[in-house]
Length: 335
Image (cartoon, rainbow, N blue to C red):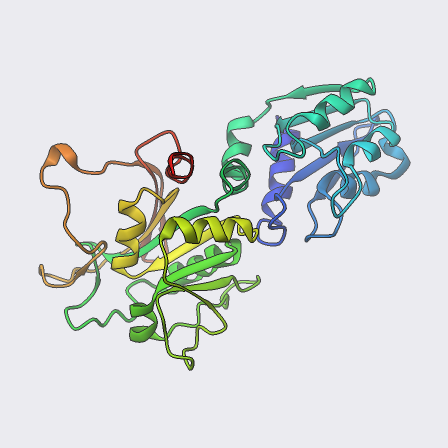
């Protein structure tokens, strides 16, 4: 258990640099108990297993490999990890979850077992599946994992009546949003938000690459968000297009109409709300979601809290949709 948790920490350290490949962690334990860490490199570089095996060198022979995701058995940008594992003389492999990618899907485990290596599957599987949720959804549906980010006052307002929003939350919360951007391959906003706020939507407060910027609608060629992709079709079509382009996670940043569109279409896989200790003090500010709400208490949307965390002066709330089956997956299968 502790070794798998160490592998998960290795994976977490490369969360924003591996997409569209999964962020995987590995640990090689030599026969003398020494441990060697590995994590997935950026695309084109070695996978987590290879990094750990390389660090261990000849000391890997007769040892064990712990890895968060099933090793690959096919040639992609790099050779199969299974070949290196077998060649290194590893005797036992512990895998958290099977790889949902059609090119793997159990073949890596079968290859290792055929070579006489003892393979166990399932340790910390729930935690690893959660850590790799965006990757799993992308591989199973062809669409990206959709995170909807909202920032509001305690009475649920994202802007004043005149449309001004400024900085509702503090610097710590804004820095966390930049971390979300760095972990996402694309960020989506509405054309109205671009016209009102002229955001750059780049990663600034944390290390990381800028996501692909997508604007729903048409905007001025001088807007700071350029270069960006302008989309005027259906949201389903956008998610299909982004998924084909290798976008594993997309961050929806608003505004209220865009947020409502994704929410009501059942396309959100995770909600991240930042609540400031502030009150707009009336009913005329702009709400989190524009448009009509539930007509009765019996029909209100009820999700599940994943976490509630204090971040600086604000609260960060993670919320899952009210179904155990991810909305993105459902929508894709039924379309």
